[in-house]
Image (cartoon, rainbow, N blue to C red):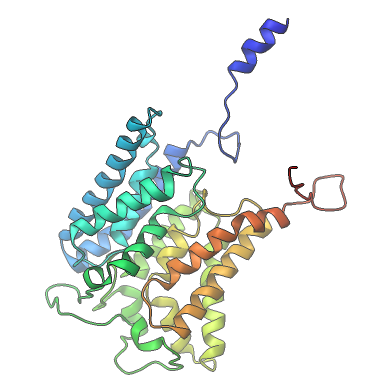
Length: 330
């Protein structure tokens, strides 16, 4: 009897939380995210040309390649078939302007996969979202190369992003900012290729919500919080508030990055706090500074707070009056 129990114990598998019984595999979920990303990718190709597809290919191949080589080097089971590395590569490619050199994508992919994802233990164990961390790293250390914004082809002239006109304590919308309809559709905007058409991103969000891939309250609370804070600061000017909502990578990041399973909270209340925190920080960074990548910094800060959020907002166990309190090990 004891021998049988030992044999059964040896067959047990220990893996990262959450442990859910579902017919939906990680690879299937990531496939749905890749399908949704085709919408902003198609819009990016329409506005910026075929180089977008080259960027996406380099991003995906770099991330998948680095993950495969790292796991082979560490003699681990390769996990490239779960498509999580492909999602990271596609997100990173869409988070850069069309003028970004391809080597910057490779550097960002190496940072995302090797440093942010694999060193902590791989998918499910990473504290920070790999694509967001790589995006912020590139914009902090390689800005001369990856912040050369241009308008969509055929004009392809250097330009400022709309956020540059309404940041750094600016409480109104200057005349140089495109109209709200242009911001929504992505007409004549400089910026990262994947964030151009808000229409395409919203369609992708609807797809992910209908397929039950993401928790819809996270992007809604994220964007709504930015809208409320900027509306208050802008003396309740509708154009000012909507310019913040429709500018930059806010809607793209709220849809594809803030909803990441591994780096986000597990508890229901935690998801609410996480989304609102991302929104408050994003609005504060935008109002106070003229700095590209404010949304990414806000998400990373909240990623770092996730363990504390889940610890204090764990749901009350049925039959108990209080939430469980995690005891520190001796």
